Length: 363
Image (tube, rainbow, N blue to C red):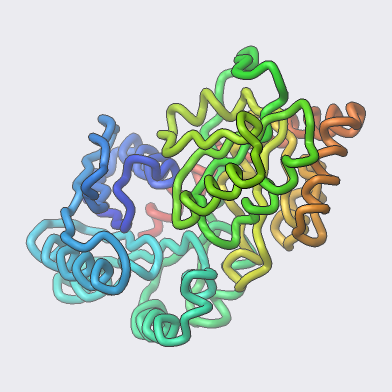
């Protein structure tokens, strides 16, 4: 069977999206290798249905990291056989594109986000110009690409002139089981990176006036220290818990114990505005009503099944009001939860997996 080699810049351990995709491809009979990086603090990878390879880099962040990692990835691809290289996001596409041309193999672009419109890139014009050059140099020359939602697919098709398939970032269905009780109080839950533009400072500030509930944050990121300091300055104590990095199999146990899920994004760049985050679907799969922004993709999902409480604007007051609605209005909460039970049958990897496999069969 063909060998599909997927490339990312993370250390593989917490990438539930790529673990899910690579597992499906491997179970369909493809030879699959997922390539990422090894950090100094990386934990051992769990055994999966596919092969995993981590490239060690001296630099761990910034321009020098991207330069070093792309060079190491280029050399790895050059000296390792593959039939298809799937480059996940712009930060790995250049080595995949160049080596696929050298070897006369297929390069697939997996756009997990609108990379040049993320807050970290959008606010730095020189960095943005570099990544836009990479995009224009590579993507229009490809035949096969996909992304996570219809809105981004339309934008990419118009911008780069090639078709983009849509493979949504929906979870593997979980067996029904009683919710584990991990706290005497309702848990308000966030899973994902603690990065800028995620609205987490508003959620923490809102907890100052929310009684009888706890905020749990599962993940780490650029704002890890700053957010911990904020919680300490507000004297929130046990009302806010930082769980650190949580592996995907552990999240499957944690998320169903939550009472409310959070996915709060600032309208900073088109990547966030047109996002369709995996956490939104993860909350639905766990039958946990969640607070989302009233951005196009989440509005579209809510028109199918009312499972979210949508915010028109992001502020401490708006987050606090939304939390109070779900904590105090039991009829609203029950309606959203009942709709989650319906929606999770539809928004399931059992169905989306077939879209992925059909995409690779066409290649």
